[in-house]
Length: 79
Image 1 (cartoon, rainbow, N blue to C red):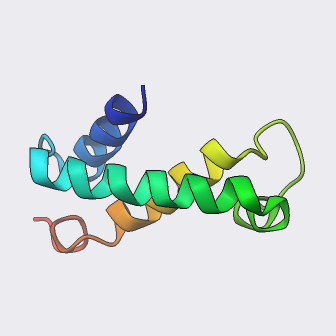
Image 2 (cartoon, rainbow, N blue to C red):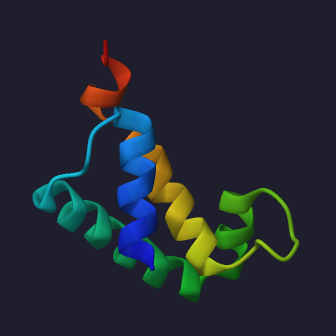
């Protein structure tokens, strides 16, 4: 389940559960990215970095979300 994956990724990075608002924003980012990657196989391969079994729109969209999580203020400045 994508929501669980995003929630777990956030929790591992920020050491706290994700709020409903943040989950909603990250789900929107995932869905928008997924649609873009479904239309452009080259961009998908570019995001993944290799052409193997992980080269699919779903993984590429999750990479975008993971990058967003890692760039959140609460992750960068956690104490």
